[in-house]
Image 1 (cartoon, rainbow, N blue to C red):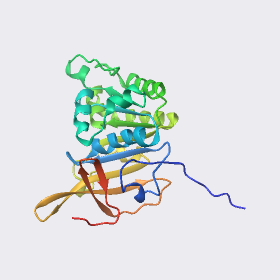
Image 2 (tube, rainbow, N blue to C red; image 1 turned 180 degrees about the vertical axis):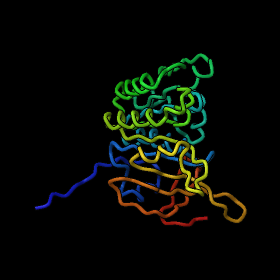
Image 3 (cartoon, helix red, strand yellow; image 1 turned 120 degrees about the vertical axis):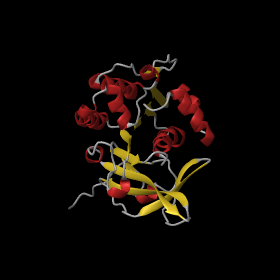
Image 4 (cartoon, rainbow, N blue to C red; image 1 turned 180 degrees about the horizontal axis):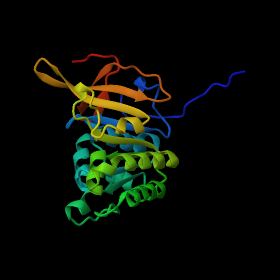
Length: 249
């Protein structure tokens, strides 16, 4: 008798996307979301955490390394996402990783110091995840980790450590990074991000009648059957919406 192997999954909270990955992300996996500037990487990650708290009662942590926490909250209000409500309920924690680096004071509950080394950075994230019993985590972004640490040549070691700790914590994680030239196969800044992640999602643009349109491509997703097709998506007043049926433009 053969025992059927079932994969526990987390809903992404992104309409249309779960249809492409057998119902959701494998629980405890680490997913890289990559793409050029403006492709929607931050929104994708933040929506994953926000909808986890709003729809599925799953706490989440957002580590913002590119904009201050207060700016992120304000920006996401455009989608009707009230982060402060879920922060009060301890369902979302936002880690401010910018203020100290640029020399600004921060009144946030969770703040990364400006001179943290790799081990201290990882240890702090671990503590915040455990503090709210988080099931979801977003780190935005990997290039900003390298900038904080001032040692880009050590990013490989840091990413391997990060991946090990994330797997140990059991959280389902999204890491964002820049794709310098996705059309030429360069889908990450350092060329290692896509190898340490168990899933890779590329967000990019295609020109349609002299207008840029967004598309999504799942390059890799372990424990999941998925298509290698490009799927259109939009960022509207409610966030990201993916169209799994194909062309909508």
